Length: 404
Image: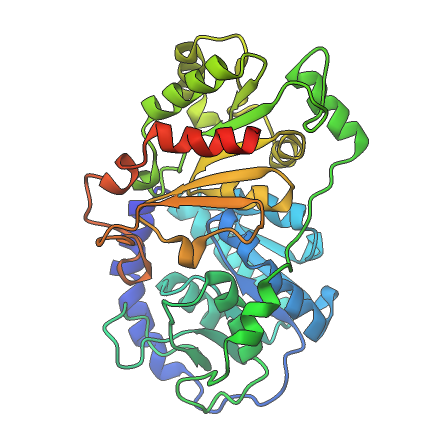
């Protein structure tokens, strides 16, 4: 399903369902500590990386074998990479179309009820679908956002542990806050009158690390060049350009021509450099065109030619990644690659990757972030000046600094 279809279903069907389910909510909240926890994060694999400290904390509270995760099928691969939640505890839902979605969602609910999971943690901000799903699991403890007296999107009163959204804390800290709420008094309104400092410290330096096997490294080196040489050995530098920002948020895209000009500059001043264009299968045509217009045999398209694990292996061998604000900016945080991320309609203050090797370019316009939880990430903008103001020269200066 495309993003607009998902938004329409969530709005037109989600609101009345939340309204009619609210009176069925049991007013008596269980005071028992969680025994089994399931995270609900259906979309965006990059955000799942930000949830790593929260998932790790949940495993500390109830044990790894008692932590579950419910996700759309297309977004499952990152969970397998993180290797924190047992594979059998990851419950997938199909989002191919509305019929597959409904049938697989029903199947997922049956699995959750059969597992007797007592706690849900809804990480989808103000999504009505996730609130409804959380309620339908039958979990006695349901942690998630509630709008209270604000004008934020309506999704009934289906949570037992109701958290007020704070737009001033990083998303990773917010996810951790949801987990900590399971240990607090749910009668407090709003919940979690605690200092943020321990939570913020809890996310710093607490990230997953991806380490490919020696076989994976050698196979990727052979795909890069007949005479492979890993980064850092004084030989050819490997620079990855990721032009995509997904159809979910096209406003985040830096113009294709900019990536072409950047590639030309890199090759002109670094003739031995190898440029890799990454992307999904749907972007193969654009990726091939970018390589063609860069006009060098050193520019290679890997779009649609790697699994997520192979992509991370590539990151572990490369020197620099230049990407729009998208999943790869977060995936790269699992490796040692230096990453330059171009932000525009969203803010790195909330969604920036947690990595000492990541740097952000963001023009911080008065209208940004226009994509946020208050508008279901549906901006009225049709002219992403915030991305257009990021020049090729500015990006290349940072790339050059990294190369030197």
